[in-house]
Each structure stands twice: as C-alpha cells, then as structure tokens.
Length: 349
Image 1 (tube, one colour):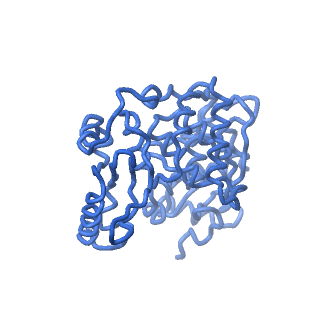
Image 2 (image 1 turned 90 degrees about the vertical axis):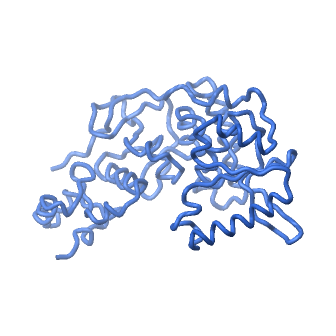
Image 3 (image 1 turned 135 degrees about the vertical axis):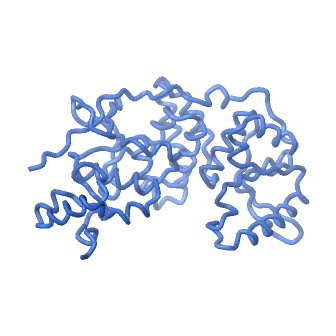
C-alpha cells in the first residue's frame, strides 16, 4: 500500500481529514491512525509516522505551524512562531506553543497549544510560503522585548543576516534592516521591555555565526567585556589563518566558541573528528603566535559567569565593573496581553 503522504499536496505532506473525506480516502486515513501509521499533528491534521519521527524539533514545530495555517481562518503568526517561519534561531524550549495575533475585536477561549495575543497596535503583516506572519522587524522587536538578552541578541543578529524579502536585492540589506530595527525600537521605548529591546538591537551584529556565538557574546558583554569584532580575519607570515569568532584588536585577544557539533561525527566539514581536532590545533597555534591572548569557551562556560570571567581575565581581556547590558540582561516578561489561546477555527462540514 502506498504511503498516505503521497496523497498530500500540503506543506510537509500534511494529511487533512477534510481532504480525505472529499477525495474518498477517509477510511484509509482512519485505519492508518488506528494502527499508528500516522501521527496526529493537531485535530484533523496528520502526518506519516516515519516522516514525523525523522523530523528535527524545528521541522516539527514548522509542521505544526503549517497545520494551524491550514485549519484556522487567515491566522497571523507572531513571536516565536513568526521567528520559526523566518528561520531565526530559537532555543528548543521555545518550540512549544503556537502564537497568533488577534485579528478580530474579540478573542476566543483556549484551544490546545495555540495562543492569541493582542499586539496593541496594527501589525505589519507579510506572507511567506503561504503563511501570514508579522514582518521581520516587528517579530524581532516583539521578541527582544520579551526574551532574555542572550536570546534576544541571537534573534537580532540573525535578522541582520536574513533581510526582509522586499530587501533581497539590496547589497546593504543588513545595514538597512539594522536601521529599521533601531528606528522601531527608539520609537517604542515606552513599551514594556522597550529599553531591553533597544539594547539588544543596538548590539546586534550580522557577523555572528551561530546561536551559540550570539549567546556567548551576550554573556561576555554582561560581564563588562568590550564589544568584539566578529569573524575577524587572522594572518601570519604564511597567509590567512582563518576567521576568529571574537577579536579584541586593541587588546590583541582572540576568543572562539565551540559547540558540540564542531568536533563531532556530524561536523559541518564532513571530515573525521580526529582530523578536525588536529586542524583546529594547528590553527590555534598559529593564532596564539600572533596574538597576546587566546581563549575557547563552550556552553558550559557561557552558562557559568564565574567560569567565563576567569577565561576572559586569563586571556588578558579587561572587564568593566558594570555594563549597560547588565542592567537589562533579562527583560521584564512579555508586554503582549493574552487574549485567548486560539483563533477561531474554520468550520468543518
């Protein structure tokens, strides 16, 4: 029997009960559901179990978002749900509820994992892959008001690397997006979390290479470290060594963030882990020879301020006693009032 996924023309090969009824394969879907051959993504929406089990948490969240898009009346996604559509970096603990903007004068009651928020303003809405979402700048600002500084900075960094679709032809699109975000944040300073949002947006840098690098930079700034140059080219007499994650030129200090993936079997280079480790050791030796200080940090260091502080000081990096980032490292919780937990679903016949 052919997989039910082959019958779907929906995103992620989602299977709608309404399609099954209209096309005459409702009994096959019901049988598959009883046997566990399909997974219920939400009421009336299914996905082949092997497809679901092979998905990453990020893809599962996007499949759930698309399922809401197929079963609710013209929903507008915002907050983490919009960020997922834009492929902005989110901690996996954020990939839980689906967030919608209220689009009618009245809200509705709770319905599972969907939450409706009142933005308190008219949202700028765009369409991406058939989904209506708050604009990139609105999405970044909303989350920067709500999330802790490390996550807000990571999202703002990534937004500068992923300009809005209407700016795709602009060679300076990242700078244009940064100006747009700054203008938006400055105009909304009185909003709850507004100062925290402005801080994260001011510190945003498109040079950040990953969520981990952004979170590490946030931790360094909150310890009083000066802002580093990102992805700075390093040279010696033999030529280009590579690009440093963090470089404090004035102090001659280089920092690197190492996530688990870098040295694992699934590392981006595709080389054997032992080869990756050897090449990195040669690279590090060359950088140390042309700098005054060098350090590596990972998630364990970033999550332990005292441990990270020791690394920075040992490398010769001066730390200010206080910093602006420290005063707003964790914004006040969300400024968007909860209206309900669901938009009005489409009526099924």
